[in-house]
Image 1 (cartoon, rainbow, N blue to C red):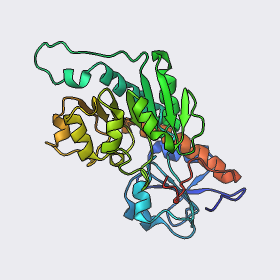
Image 2 (image 1 turned 180 degrees about the horizontal axis):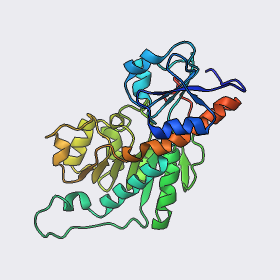
Image 3 (image 1 turned 120 degrees about the vertical axis):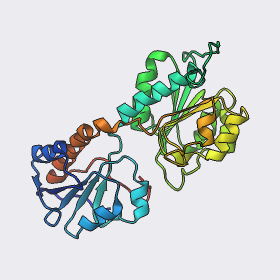
Length: 308
Protein backbone atom coordinates (compact mmCIF):
# COMPACT_ATOMS: atom_id res chain seq x y z
CA UNK A 1 0.00 0.00 0.00
CA UNK A 2 1.31 3.45 -0.86
CA UNK A 3 2.36 5.80 1.92
CA UNK A 4 2.18 9.59 2.07
CA UNK A 5 5.48 11.39 1.48
CA UNK A 6 6.79 14.26 3.55
CA UNK A 7 6.00 17.96 3.27
CA UNK A 8 3.36 18.12 0.58
CA UNK A 9 0.56 20.54 -0.08
CA UNK A 10 -3.08 19.50 0.11
CA UNK A 11 -5.35 20.74 -2.66
CA UNK A 12 -8.69 19.41 -1.54
CA UNK A 13 -11.93 18.74 -3.36
CA UNK A 14 -14.91 18.20 -1.03
CA UNK A 15 -17.71 16.43 -2.82
CA UNK A 16 -20.24 15.77 -4.03
CA UNK A 17 -21.70 18.50 -1.81
CA UNK A 18 -19.58 20.91 0.21
CA UNK A 19 -20.64 20.95 3.88
CA UNK A 20 -19.47 24.12 5.60
CA UNK A 21 -17.96 22.18 8.51
CA UNK A 22 -15.74 20.19 6.17
CA UNK A 23 -14.65 23.23 4.16
CA UNK A 24 -13.70 24.95 7.41
CA UNK A 25 -11.80 21.85 8.55
CA UNK A 26 -9.75 21.84 5.34
CA UNK A 27 -8.74 25.47 5.79
CA UNK A 28 -8.12 25.05 9.52
CA UNK A 29 -5.67 22.23 8.77
CA UNK A 30 -3.76 24.36 6.24
CA UNK A 31 -5.19 22.80 3.10
CA UNK A 32 -6.65 24.73 0.18
CA UNK A 33 -10.02 24.08 -1.43
CA UNK A 34 -9.72 23.11 -5.09
CA UNK A 35 -11.75 21.91 -8.03
CA UNK A 36 -11.87 18.18 -8.70
CA UNK A 37 -9.55 18.59 -11.67
CA UNK A 38 -6.88 20.35 -9.60
CA UNK A 39 -7.17 18.32 -6.39
CA UNK A 40 -4.66 15.84 -5.02
CA UNK A 41 -6.99 15.03 -2.10
CA UNK A 42 -10.69 14.13 -2.26
CA UNK A 43 -13.00 14.25 0.76
CA UNK A 44 -16.08 12.29 -0.29
CA UNK A 45 -19.36 12.54 1.61
CA UNK A 46 -21.75 10.28 -0.32
CA UNK A 47 -21.93 6.57 -1.01
CA UNK A 48 -22.20 6.92 -4.79
CA UNK A 49 -19.27 5.10 -6.37
CA UNK A 50 -20.03 6.25 -9.91
CA UNK A 51 -19.99 9.90 -8.85
CA UNK A 52 -16.69 9.42 -7.08
CA UNK A 53 -15.19 7.58 -10.04
CA UNK A 54 -16.01 10.60 -12.21
CA UNK A 55 -13.80 12.94 -10.16
CA UNK A 56 -10.81 10.65 -9.65
CA UNK A 57 -7.74 11.16 -11.82
CA UNK A 58 -4.07 10.10 -11.58
CA UNK A 59 -3.19 13.19 -9.54
CA UNK A 60 -5.44 12.21 -6.62
CA UNK A 61 -3.16 10.76 -3.95
CA UNK A 62 -5.62 10.23 -1.14
CA UNK A 63 -9.40 9.78 -0.72
CA UNK A 64 -11.10 10.27 2.66
CA UNK A 65 -14.45 8.45 2.88
CA UNK A 66 -17.22 9.46 5.27
CA UNK A 67 -18.29 5.94 6.25
CA UNK A 68 -16.74 3.57 8.74
CA UNK A 69 -17.73 0.49 6.73
CA UNK A 70 -16.09 0.13 3.32
CA UNK A 71 -17.46 -3.14 1.94
CA UNK A 72 -19.50 -1.36 -0.75
CA UNK A 73 -16.48 0.68 -1.79
CA UNK A 74 -14.37 -2.46 -2.06
CA UNK A 75 -17.10 -4.15 -4.08
CA UNK A 76 -17.15 -1.17 -6.46
CA UNK A 77 -13.55 -1.88 -7.48
CA UNK A 78 -12.47 1.72 -6.83
CA UNK A 79 -10.31 0.98 -3.78
CA UNK A 80 -6.87 -0.27 -4.78
CA UNK A 81 -3.19 0.40 -4.11
CA UNK A 82 -2.80 3.25 -6.61
CA UNK A 83 -3.69 5.81 -3.93
CA UNK A 84 -4.33 5.97 -0.19
CA UNK A 85 -7.90 5.47 1.00
CA UNK A 86 -9.07 6.22 4.51
CA UNK A 87 -12.40 5.55 6.18
CA UNK A 88 -14.15 6.95 9.23
CA UNK A 89 -13.36 3.79 11.20
CA UNK A 90 -13.30 4.47 14.92
CA UNK A 91 -14.72 7.95 14.55
CA UNK A 92 -18.24 7.14 15.70
CA UNK A 93 -17.36 4.60 18.38
CA UNK A 94 -18.63 6.58 21.37
CA UNK A 95 -22.01 7.24 19.76
CA UNK A 96 -22.49 3.64 18.70
CA UNK A 97 -21.42 2.43 22.16
CA UNK A 98 -24.15 4.55 23.75
CA UNK A 99 -26.69 2.86 21.47
CA UNK A 100 -25.34 -0.58 22.36
CA UNK A 101 -25.84 0.11 26.06
CA UNK A 102 -29.40 1.32 25.37
CA UNK A 103 -30.20 -1.86 23.44
CA UNK A 104 -28.74 -4.12 26.14
CA UNK A 105 -30.75 -2.33 28.81
CA UNK A 106 -33.88 -2.60 26.70
CA UNK A 107 -33.32 -6.34 26.34
CA UNK A 108 -32.70 -6.83 30.05
CA UNK A 109 -35.82 -4.91 31.00
CA UNK A 110 -38.09 -6.55 28.42
CA UNK A 111 -38.87 -3.32 26.62
CA UNK A 112 -39.19 -4.93 23.17
CA UNK A 113 -42.26 -6.89 24.23
CA UNK A 114 -43.62 -4.28 26.64
CA UNK A 115 -43.76 -1.62 23.92
CA UNK A 116 -46.06 -3.83 21.83
CA UNK A 117 -48.59 -4.60 24.56
CA UNK A 118 -51.99 -2.95 24.77
CA UNK A 119 -52.96 -4.24 28.20
CA UNK A 120 -51.40 -4.12 31.69
CA UNK A 121 -49.44 -7.36 31.96
CA UNK A 122 -46.55 -8.17 34.26
CA UNK A 123 -43.38 -9.48 32.72
CA UNK A 124 -40.02 -10.70 33.96
CA UNK A 125 -36.98 -8.44 33.81
CA UNK A 126 -33.30 -9.09 34.40
CA UNK A 127 -30.54 -7.17 36.14
CA UNK A 128 -27.41 -6.38 34.22
CA UNK A 129 -25.30 -6.83 37.32
CA UNK A 130 -23.55 -10.16 37.10
CA UNK A 131 -24.38 -10.70 33.43
CA UNK A 132 -21.76 -11.33 30.76
CA UNK A 133 -21.47 -9.08 27.71
CA UNK A 134 -19.35 -10.34 24.82
CA UNK A 135 -18.39 -8.09 21.91
CA UNK A 136 -17.29 -9.55 18.58
CA UNK A 137 -15.09 -7.04 16.79
CA UNK A 138 -14.21 -5.21 19.99
CA UNK A 139 -12.20 -2.32 18.57
CA UNK A 140 -13.12 1.26 19.34
CA UNK A 141 -16.81 0.46 19.78
CA UNK A 142 -15.95 -2.38 22.13
CA UNK A 143 -13.67 -0.30 24.32
CA UNK A 144 -16.20 2.54 24.52
CA UNK A 145 -19.03 0.11 25.31
CA UNK A 146 -17.07 -1.64 28.03
CA UNK A 147 -16.23 1.72 29.61
CA UNK A 148 -19.92 2.61 29.76
CA UNK A 149 -20.87 -0.81 31.13
CA UNK A 150 -18.35 -0.72 33.96
CA UNK A 151 -20.87 0.85 36.35
CA UNK A 152 -23.30 -2.05 35.81
CA UNK A 153 -21.00 -4.70 37.23
CA UNK A 154 -21.00 -6.94 34.16
CA UNK A 155 -18.35 -9.39 33.05
CA UNK A 156 -16.88 -8.26 29.73
CA UNK A 157 -15.38 -10.41 26.94
CA UNK A 158 -13.80 -8.78 23.90
CA UNK A 159 -12.95 -10.61 20.68
CA UNK A 160 -10.74 -9.10 17.99
CA UNK A 161 -9.09 -10.42 14.85
CA UNK A 162 -5.65 -10.02 16.45
CA UNK A 163 -6.58 -11.32 19.88
CA UNK A 164 -4.95 -8.25 21.42
CA UNK A 165 -5.98 -7.03 24.84
CA UNK A 166 -9.20 -4.98 24.66
CA UNK A 167 -9.36 -1.98 27.05
CA UNK A 168 -11.96 -2.61 29.74
CA UNK A 169 -12.37 -6.31 28.97
CA UNK A 170 -12.08 -8.93 31.68
CA UNK A 171 -11.12 -11.42 29.00
CA UNK A 172 -9.73 -10.81 25.50
CA UNK A 173 -9.77 -13.41 22.74
CA UNK A 174 -8.98 -13.98 19.08
CA UNK A 175 -11.24 -15.45 16.37
CA UNK A 176 -10.92 -18.98 17.78
CA UNK A 177 -12.64 -17.72 20.93
CA UNK A 178 -16.00 -17.03 19.24
CA UNK A 179 -17.69 -20.24 20.40
CA UNK A 180 -16.68 -19.67 24.01
CA UNK A 181 -17.79 -16.04 23.86
CA UNK A 182 -21.23 -17.08 22.64
CA UNK A 183 -21.57 -19.82 25.25
CA UNK A 184 -20.66 -17.47 28.07
CA UNK A 185 -22.51 -14.31 26.97
CA UNK A 186 -25.93 -13.20 28.09
CA UNK A 187 -25.63 -10.40 25.51
CA UNK A 188 -23.49 -11.01 22.42
CA UNK A 189 -22.76 -7.80 20.52
CA UNK A 190 -21.65 -7.78 16.88
CA UNK A 191 -19.40 -4.82 16.04
CA UNK A 192 -17.14 -6.44 13.43
CA UNK A 193 -16.56 -5.20 9.88
CA UNK A 194 -18.27 -7.03 7.04
CA UNK A 195 -15.69 -8.99 5.04
CA UNK A 196 -15.87 -12.25 3.07
CA UNK A 197 -14.73 -14.02 6.25
CA UNK A 198 -17.37 -12.45 8.51
CA UNK A 199 -20.43 -12.66 6.24
CA UNK A 200 -22.96 -14.94 7.99
CA UNK A 201 -20.57 -15.20 10.92
CA UNK A 202 -23.63 -16.00 13.04
CA UNK A 203 -25.90 -18.77 11.82
CA UNK A 204 -27.89 -21.60 13.36
CA UNK A 205 -24.90 -23.22 15.08
CA UNK A 206 -23.72 -19.99 16.65
CA UNK A 207 -27.21 -19.04 17.82
CA UNK A 208 -27.55 -22.42 19.51
CA UNK A 209 -24.32 -21.69 21.38
CA UNK A 210 -25.74 -18.36 22.56
CA UNK A 211 -28.68 -20.28 23.97
CA UNK A 212 -32.15 -19.57 25.36
CA UNK A 213 -31.00 -16.88 27.80
CA UNK A 214 -28.84 -15.09 25.28
CA UNK A 215 -29.60 -11.92 23.32
CA UNK A 216 -27.95 -11.06 20.02
CA UNK A 217 -27.19 -7.35 19.52
CA UNK A 218 -26.06 -6.27 16.04
CA UNK A 219 -24.81 -2.72 15.43
CA UNK A 220 -22.35 -3.61 12.65
CA UNK A 221 -23.75 -4.96 9.37
CA UNK A 222 -26.87 -7.02 8.78
CA UNK A 223 -25.06 -9.59 6.66
CA UNK A 224 -23.00 -10.74 9.62
CA UNK A 225 -26.11 -12.72 10.58
CA UNK A 226 -28.02 -15.33 8.61
CA UNK A 227 -31.49 -13.81 8.86
CA UNK A 228 -33.40 -17.03 8.24
CA UNK A 229 -31.42 -18.81 10.94
CA UNK A 230 -32.09 -15.91 13.31
CA UNK A 231 -35.82 -16.05 12.61
CA UNK A 232 -35.89 -19.79 13.30
CA UNK A 233 -33.97 -19.27 16.55
CA UNK A 234 -36.26 -16.46 17.69
CA UNK A 235 -39.43 -18.41 16.93
CA UNK A 236 -38.15 -21.62 18.46
CA UNK A 237 -36.82 -20.17 21.70
CA UNK A 238 -33.25 -21.07 20.77
CA UNK A 239 -32.25 -17.54 21.83
CA UNK A 240 -34.00 -15.09 24.14
CA UNK A 241 -34.17 -12.30 21.56
CA UNK A 242 -32.35 -9.86 19.32
CA UNK A 243 -31.70 -6.12 19.19
CA UNK A 244 -30.89 -5.01 15.66
CA UNK A 245 -29.73 -1.62 14.44
CA UNK A 246 -28.81 -3.28 11.14
CA UNK A 247 -30.59 -6.00 9.17
CA UNK A 248 -30.35 -8.14 6.07
CA UNK A 249 -32.09 -7.02 3.93
CA UNK A 250 -31.73 -3.34 4.72
CA UNK A 251 -33.89 -1.31 4.84
CA UNK A 252 -36.03 -4.05 6.38
CA UNK A 253 -39.17 -4.27 4.19
CA UNK A 254 -42.62 -3.57 5.60
CA UNK A 255 -44.23 -6.80 6.72
CA UNK A 256 -40.94 -8.67 7.16
CA UNK A 257 -41.29 -11.41 9.81
CA UNK A 258 -38.71 -9.73 12.06
CA UNK A 259 -41.15 -6.85 12.62
CA UNK A 260 -43.62 -9.30 14.13
CA UNK A 261 -41.34 -10.99 16.68
CA UNK A 262 -42.14 -9.83 20.21
CA UNK A 263 -38.58 -10.62 21.28
CA UNK A 264 -36.97 -8.36 18.69
CA UNK A 265 -36.16 -4.66 19.01
CA UNK A 266 -35.27 -2.93 15.73
CA UNK A 267 -33.82 0.53 15.21
CA UNK A 268 -33.30 1.79 11.62
CA UNK A 269 -29.47 2.00 11.45
CA UNK A 270 -29.36 5.08 13.65
CA UNK A 271 -26.67 4.17 16.21
CA UNK A 272 -24.58 6.91 14.63
CA UNK A 273 -27.04 9.77 14.06
CA UNK A 274 -26.53 11.47 10.70
CA UNK A 275 -27.72 14.78 12.13
CA UNK A 276 -24.43 14.91 14.06
CA UNK A 277 -22.30 13.35 11.36
CA UNK A 278 -20.38 16.28 9.88
CA UNK A 279 -18.98 17.59 13.16
CA UNK A 280 -17.05 14.39 13.89
CA UNK A 281 -16.02 13.90 10.27
CA UNK A 282 -14.61 17.43 10.27
CA UNK A 283 -12.33 16.50 13.17
CA UNK A 284 -11.03 13.45 11.28
CA UNK A 285 -10.57 15.48 8.06
CA UNK A 286 -8.50 18.13 9.85
CA UNK A 287 -6.41 15.54 11.67
CA UNK A 288 -5.68 13.50 8.56
CA UNK A 289 -4.94 16.58 6.47
CA UNK A 290 -2.32 17.66 8.98
CA UNK A 291 -0.85 14.16 8.88
CA UNK A 292 -0.91 14.08 5.07
CA UNK A 293 0.92 17.40 4.77
CA UNK A 294 3.59 16.41 7.28
CA UNK A 295 4.11 12.92 5.84
CA UNK A 296 2.77 10.99 8.82
CA UNK A 297 0.61 7.86 8.65
CA UNK A 298 -3.07 8.59 8.12
CA UNK A 299 -5.77 7.40 10.48
CA UNK A 300 -7.98 4.49 9.41
CA UNK A 301 -6.21 3.55 6.18
CA UNK A 302 -8.22 0.99 4.23
CA UNK A 303 -6.48 -2.33 3.64
CA UNK A 304 -8.14 -3.99 0.62
CA UNK A 305 -6.64 -7.36 1.58
CA UNK A 306 -8.31 -7.28 5.00
CA UNK A 307 -11.51 -5.75 3.76
CA UNK A 308 -11.59 -2.74 6.09
